[in-house]
Structure formats: C-alpha cells, structure tokens
Image (cartoon, rainbow, N blue to C red; front, top):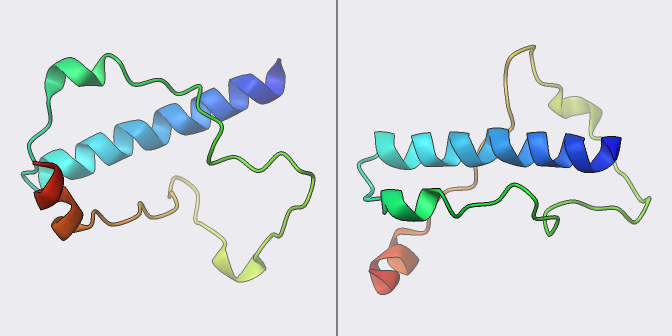
Length: 79
C-alpha cells in the first residue's frame, strides 16, 4: 500500500508540473480532459528490483527532475 501511495504522489506532482509547463509555454490544453488524468499509471516506474542511482545527479531540496520536452512536430501532427 505504501509503495502504490508513493507512486501516486510522485505521478501527481509530475502531472501537475507538466500541465503548468504546457500552460506557461502557451500550449493549448483541453481543460475537460485534465479531470480524466490518473496518477495511477505505472508505466514509468521500474519495479523489477534493478535500480541504478546516478550520484552525480543529486537534486537540491525542493527541486525536481526536468520534464521531457514536447516534440513540437509531433504536437502539430496531433492537433
């Protein structure tokens, strides 16, 4: 239970950061679809037990990993 809660929190934080980033860049967002996003996805989580910790990428307190950039050409095709 604790693991699934931690994953949901992690995903919720990054979903919010992704939405904020898109809004700051002026990328249109369908507000009605936001309520259908779920932090319960596990596709981005490795539960195999094989973990590689890169010690050269320590984040300062209150900082987060960078979001992946939006491929503008892909976004144009989807519009």
